[in-house]
Length: 114
Image 1 (cartoon, rainbow, N blue to C red):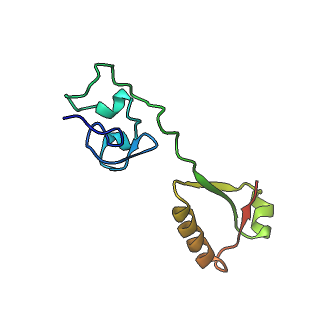
Image 2 (cartoon, rainbow, N blue to C red; image 1 turned 120 degrees about the horizontal axis):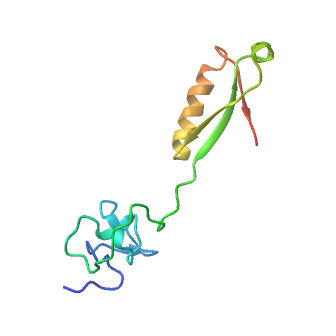
């Protein structure tokens, strides 16, 4: 069976920018020409060796925030060293900051802008 040019060569789902739209398909993380999309699938059209790290999709940009915990008096004694927190999604960062804001008054903090 031959797949249309706008269908994934592995599962037949739609393709957007060379990536499969079915997130369960390996080609959702690999472009259609990448041998890694056939990993573990014996009927792939290529005999190319499967790489362990593919450059099809860049690493996701992490959302980070730096926080100075404690009151100015405590920081004066302990030093001003911010703690950096990283999150894969903006929603995770927003939820974290909602928790930090809920604790404000119980413990002071400052967000450090780069």
